[in-house]
Length: 79
Image 1 (cartoon, rainbow, N blue to C red):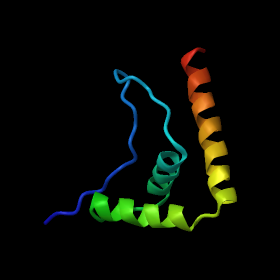
Image 2 (image 1 turned 120 degrees about the horizontal axis):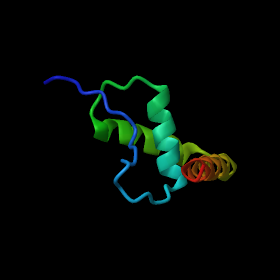
Image 3 (image 1 turned 30 degrees about the horizontal axis):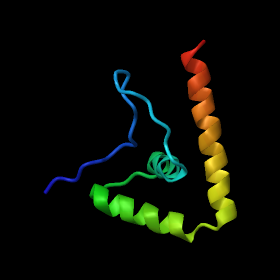
Image 4 (image 1 turned 30 degrees about the vertical axis):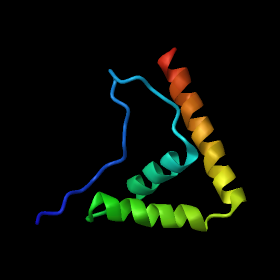
């Protein structure tokens, strides 16, 4: 079976943009950083495990970065 490289989810231009939660933001950042050559369910499981290992303070940092990311995307839409 051929391996497929998956990329992070992106909202299409025609789709309604909804707020990502911090975990999805974290997951997408992890996918950008690593070259995964595995099935999507394996990728997700590894990232879930990493997320669960984070302290609440580390998760809060990801939540802060996710909020900043959304705000910058929102501001760009109105420029």
